Length: 403
Image 1 (cartoon, one colour):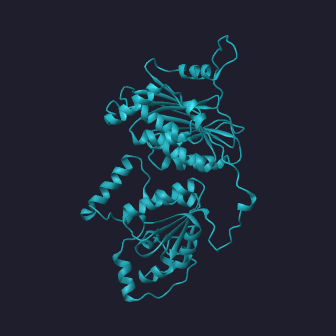
Image 2 (spheres, rainbow, N blue to C red):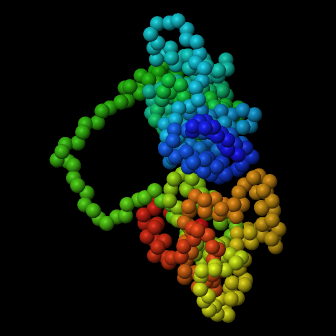
Image 3 (cartoon, rainbow, N blue to C red):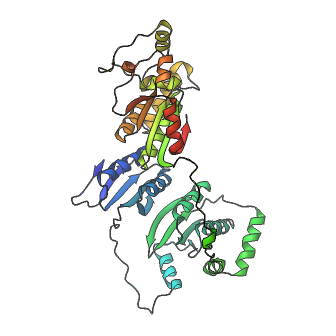
């Protein structure tokens, strides 16, 4: 459900109950409606993996997450498109004081909505890698279970989210104030590190060297190379990598087809041009129930007709490669996907069509499987080509995968 206000005002996208990749696909679909218009989108989701997916999508879509909070099992994020400003928040009443120093501003940020037992980790002035190393040192002590990280490094959002995911830490909220990022993290009680690491942290703490001072001393200005050292690299004919993803699907196993379609939709949602090549057994996924009206009839031999008869056709008839159990395993997986609100194979194909994902069917494989163009589903994004086309597209793609 998407609700909007006039004049490109705040937009709300309700993705509660949806599982990956449905929330990102819904967000990308909404963002396309407001392309180049400054718009603030609020997304409500319950998928635990949504923050990581959101951060990756924002990088490719040139959007920014202005806030991310968790409450009662729901994740609420605000994304700014085309330089939109986040909804205004009531500013706290400033206390009468002299010219604010950096230390004072950090203390003020640390005090905002911070529990008394929350440990404040100020890593302003450090790079993203140094900040994560410092965060790891703090948590190895084992005593801090609630941490607020204050940082200003570029790319710190993805680093903190990755660290939290790797260490089973909960990201309670993310927000920005005065050009700095604030992360509220809940560390699991069982987080423990080797005693050697604890001793190292204790020794470093005894040095009492603050983070900004270390960062300033570590900055070294590299001299510019002399003009004579600059050489022109000759053109060796190498292909230029494009913002394109090329996938080759060989098998018609249900789990492989689901993975391929999820990856294709995720890449398209991040603004990539996506080409999916179907070869050998995978061409049966695109077999339609009715023949193409504009495709001529072609003769098919006896062996070809037998191959066509023995292989299931269409998205709804594909089976698992493991635990098939005479079709029971496939029905169980489909039931679990419906129960968890995970997009089915049919729905993923529909989403791919909406996102203009290009389906390319291998002509050679069609002949081997006893298929003609009349047998392939009549979708606007379906084309026919050979293996050379796949090789050429893979050569220019920044991502190339085989399923």
